[in-house]
Image (cartoon, rainbow, N blue to C red; front, side, top):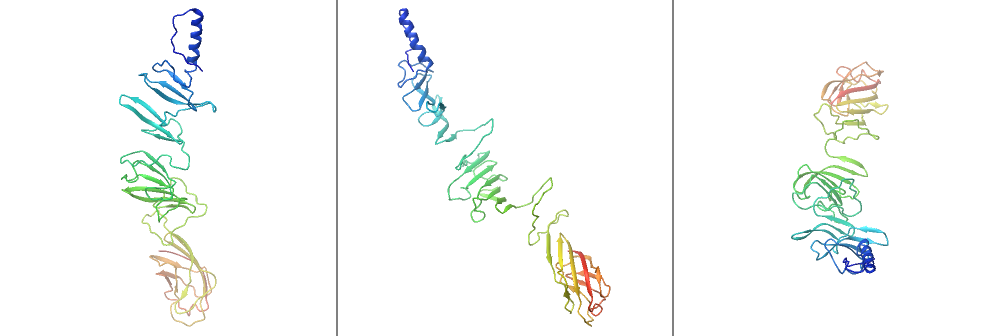
Length: 353
């Protein structure tokens, strides 16, 4: 490390060579020293060894100040662009200095656009890119928050595509929140997707948590949808007017009852409802009776709305008969209970609701 005034005076040869040999190491070491060089020039380099780590500085164009470019960690053999004492990168202008980016405690704050020609990797547990609260801002907004006070404007983690602050009106914008709305899906372990519908108004369209995926609205797929554990329909059918939409599926049991007589149910009677179609099974026996009432069967699980459903036994020990679906009963028309006395019928029936 050495410094030199960079002035080779008129002198004899031995002195000239000594003066030159002192100047060249100064140039090679960037004028390294604990004090600034005695002679300074515009754009001159100086390694300030008085600081730990050492600072790499360059003289400004006006030759009246030093600009700190970075730090040299001699122990780690690393160079870090840290800027001046404020930890900021600055640019010189006629009006003074403007901060382009600041590095504080490992975080980078950028004034203006941040452009990456390769992968931009974001990591950590705290906020990475804070929500821009300036109305009219655009682009992708990423926010992280470690506060226990979570609400619509202070989510645990959120990504907004479409731009603008959360308080702005950007209809159709998609928002992702890692907890949701207090009182509804206030859960840091859930992932919630919203669509913006107005000022401070978002509609939850999908939620993923430990129980699975819940979607508000239709799911559209151009390929097959595979369900490893089946598809669940709501307990109460939500009817669709679309002829190509399957809006209900249900399995259960039903209890056939007689018209003025008590039928014996020999095996469990089941039904399956697929959309509007009902398929049911039955196995019943009439008591010994002289009742003249028609041998109607009541208790169908769903009322028929389309005429033509019939109950035709595959096995019978009573009078051969066909029962017609009407409402929640199968009407016998002319065959009476007396005709079916001690008779048994087994079979299935199909009708539509």
